[in-house]
Image 1 (cartoon, protein in one colour):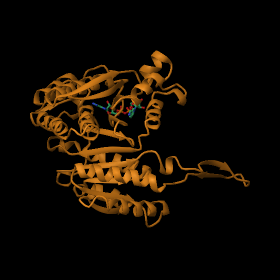
Image 2 (cartoon, protein in one colour):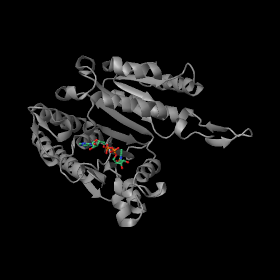
Image 3 (cartoon, rainbow, N blue to C red):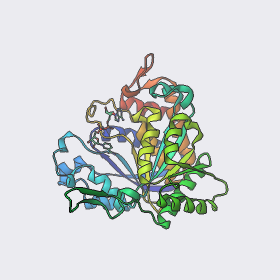
Length: 359
Ligand code: NAD
């Protein structure tokens, strides 16, 4: 029997509610596929501040380091908004990403036929969209030096950020892109601005070189401005997109809005070894609905499906969860955020229950 250690960090707001449902799904899949998931639950974010004065304790960090994967709910809330930036709940996420060396962010955007009306785009444009953005997370413009704002002798100011990437940094994110494409539709589009930015000229050169190791994956290239347009014009053309940090930040948000339903979208952040990965919904802690039992747990349940696929190579188990979610939607079950007329409104727990039943 395969055994995996998972650190479960529910966090704040709706975090505990949605993670609770996702954990039930994980356990059920474990029984079905004869895998043992050893779960260790711990505090993170505001919950950790209340108990220990810091958003992430050394013990919890150690727990995540010795786990095979991390499942996170969400952090933050009005209660902690007045705190200094250095101890805000959100600092826990940055610390986890840094300490676990999570350099690749995977964000799928998939249209469910039943929820097609939730999008602001025309159904005929988005029907069948199933794409994934792989964003480099630790380099580029957000981290490059020199950076800062300086005063000039004439009294004006000068702001500087530096877009910098080394060959190894590009190689490792390119490999993630190709590996992910291999597990999906075998098409990878590398997005750059190689006609203007030398950094991304190098990016393109290195991606092409890495691509020689993946003859089964069809590689294409696109400038970022064109990609922003194509995502709206014809999003079905994409399978996997790989791109640098800033471009990925913008494009992954654009891609997620194709679907229009934030409660449905999972994500993964992965590092250089198999046991370095964190899975979480893309939404936040939703303080406005916390404790009401009405949050949509599907994004977190689908994050578990991603964990099975990308951390544990349990592709079939992952697919079964995705199909269970499809069936539940097809049967008309809806949480408040995705409610449509004529459908059955369910609570967070009932949605979790419905997915379990379909498994
Ligand atoms: P949010 O994603 O929490 O909420 C935005 C809107 O979407 C709200 O109306 C909320 O009710 C709704 N929503 C979100 N998830 C939902 C779900 N699963 N089911 C139903 N409705 C859902 O973003 P926000 O309001 O800007 O931020 C709230 C808090 O969350 C802030 O403290 C913010 O810093 C934090 N945050 C945390 C993360 C994270 O932990 N990764 C990400 C984003 C925001």
